[in-house]
Length: 139
Image 1: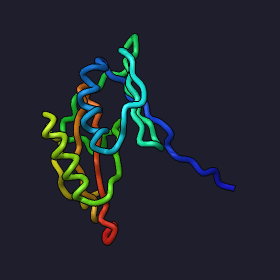
Image 2: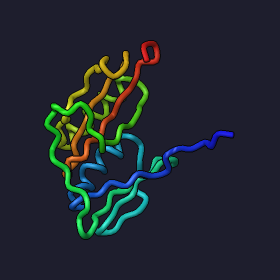
Image 3: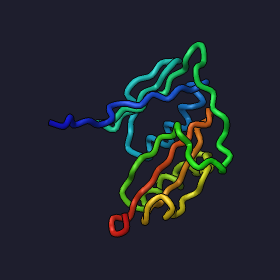
Image 4: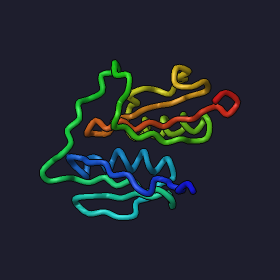
């Protein structure tokens, strides 16, 4: 018998919780997450099902280089699946209103799968956060 599983929480190491909060408050807030816990060393968000935690580690364990755009895969990124291109566009617009330019603006990526449409953002520690949709008629 197969085990049913889902992601319960994701942890992302950050160097400055206060600076990262500005990014994650805007991004996760636009995706329906709310702040559920915080201290000077961490902040947690939940959509009622999945939690995202950002935390400062001492000593720092992870240091990322900024994406160059030439990578075939960014292995340590988080991608949120949303319903429809309009949702991707709304999140991107909300992020830009909050001062965060997309790393990759909303656009189609048929090289991944037909109907794939995504925008990606980079947090202050160079973690790539993607928001994407797949057109159900194509994907």
